[in-house]
Image (cartoon, rainbow, N blue to C red):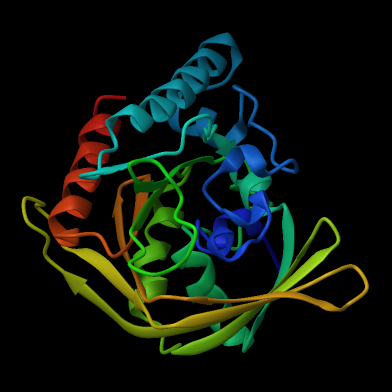
Length: 280
């Protein structure tokens, strides 16, 4: 059994079929269970100082620097809906708002890595910094249906341990998972998510010095259940692609559906993140 941020798990798609706000993963403001990390977090302190007031100040500055990346994320013709925001969270708060079970269990590591997660997110890495950005819709307006859907979202993480960060691409590339189910429970609601992985490979994107991991999803379905166990809603989701990059302690995932020239746009966002965090 793992803990994860249920709102993250279905970024922006479930809302198109009439689900509640908190089915939009990257609108972190919807996640009442998430708490922002304290400035003096153990994992961030370990990466910036040796404790005390200086370390706390440095950790707080790192959190602010990560949050500042929001303004650098751009997708052509897309914008975040007005009034929505995505505060920086801790790994514990972000991934711990829902209890989830992956079946088969052998796909757990892949599922966690696809969300930039790990098996240490409620332990040694609990205070790693997580920053979701988006989702981005055409002109900042969520569509009323899924026809010609265009949406993008970004998730970033600052790992306290670069070695733990390196397990993300390794888990993705080393997996043989093609289909699995994630059953998540949060705030009295349960959802069974079908995950269909059509391809995982390492690719070169324009302008990036190092290859990244591309994860392609096929058509997927979710079933939402109420507190009484009755089916409340079913959603079918169009294929999506995630581009995942890890550089030292810094990780980023860019997910897109229907975005034109998606490789170039994903590369632009990834490079902006690498440059931004390199100046931290």
